Image 1 (cartoon, one colour):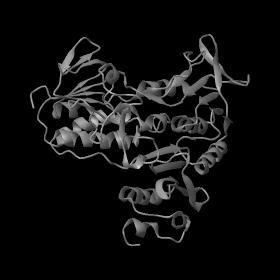
Image 2: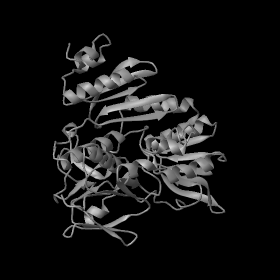
Image 3: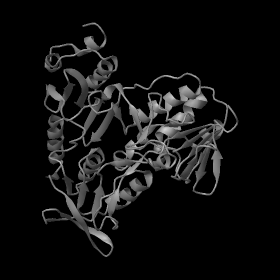
Image 4: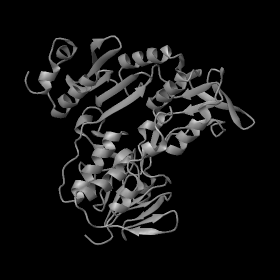
Length: 413
């Protein structure tokens, strides 16, 4: 490989992991991380939880301290955006007018928040939460807030709602679906978390749409719903999903509909370009029967880390198809939700356990597809073993509290 080395467009979890794994594997040529944020690469999950609650400070978010990059000869170019790919010349053009030659380019461009297309969305006090700057702005304003509206009952919105409610602030969550986390979890789990948040005095408006954020003196003062009703709010958080940052790939002629298309090795049709993390759409054995073509785009720390390692191994001459089991977590108030696998709206459910700690086992075409656990970490770890190994489990066995799941996972059943 020539001295141009590896260039990574994106300095988040996936891009950083790729660079770190390359050096751990003995890669000697140059590695350059280009990221549009000015901070060092950092963890995103604590932003809506521990960081927002003041339990973690900024220094605790960084994946490594500054000395790591110099010690491992990784060039980090912060505050710079990749603007175009010249695939023929193998150069990446940057927002500061510079360009970088590459032997291999890895797109780790992540995703951005989906905007709320209503009047007033740009008022002061109306926020989204994706990066460190967003979290800093929310931390600065939440202490003075008197009434809060969250638009969207997904993970980010509910995590923020729990933090705000723990401060004694009145919080209303507006959701177009009929339950929380409708696209991510079973109806059973959605009902539980609705009740859990209501116990924290969070109010919900389901089946509701937002038509405007109203303001006063340039700041949010309320939210108008589609039925004409108004809710007071001097702080509004919008969390209605994300869009993959695919434009760089599209403009370079690479396939990128809902994410940059890659094969089972996370390579694009251009052998000199790969894509990983939130921006990548890839074939997954766990998406069989879930999507028409068996491909998915996953937004999770696990996926970012595992894909970074997978591409690093390929660039080090040890290629292996990517088939890692997806898993996720969300801390909401006193409860931890953990999910292993990928479920769809048509998957059947059986519940194991009762009370405040239980698991929902999801089945697609009679096979275990996912397990959702609340405050049952042992179930989650067992589920990861079962799903990763493709171990057969019936709904009756999953529901039976006397059936030894651990023994099955360990191959002793």
